Image (tube, rainbow, N blue to C red; front, side, top):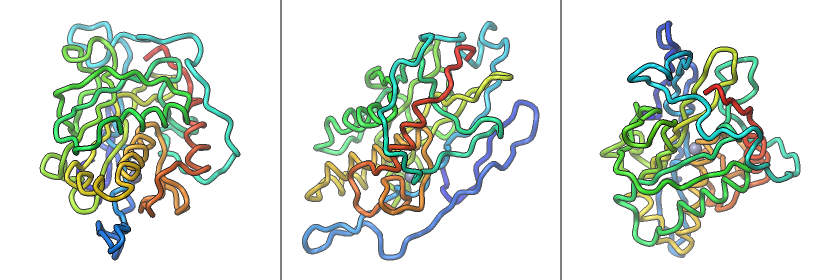
Length: 291
Ligand SMILES: [Zn+2]
């Protein structure tokens, strides 16, 4: 996550880092953070890009059984069938998915046969933001059919190099999604008009599909402290969190400005039909109990 202008890399277990995507960065002109006479905002906000942050490739083979393993035991919490199903949508195609690391796999998603755990670092949360993360998670859960479970607050700081398995902190399972209120001082990628970042690394074991684990949402607390004071500020901040969570579960930016996943937000506060269709698809990923 870090610099938004930079190329992203992922590491394979035995090859040099490979370039997998180049971030599109369009600096908008005249679309900065601004408060008009009527409190109208030419928002913002770093609903710009967000990469499939922390792209990383984890080889899981026999490792779970070794002391000091970098990956958890297999199949923790895995059910035989998906825990939920996404709602029907109108079939819009106005969405984009993060690029799959494997051409034989159409898209990467969280495993729908397990609960998706998340934790929140509450430090620096803007006044008046109580409940917004929960509301945004509920919206993504409803749109994907994925079951989210709140695991409480954490002191873990956001990081570009977050460990996806932290047994001492979170037990012997993949680390939960980490949602933090942070700042450009801590996460330089939030500099300028970027209000948030979101994405997930993926885990993989040979001959099985890639699965997202241990995502992060990094919210720019100083920016959002300003935005939440606008007349519809809570709705705007919630929309930013929803946008970043949609990156976490696998949506990329789409050119259609009527969707929340457009990279420059036009002040939308609700998911569009394309966003919903994409999120519904992302709720139908493969179950991979071998991870
Ligand atoms: Zn974005």
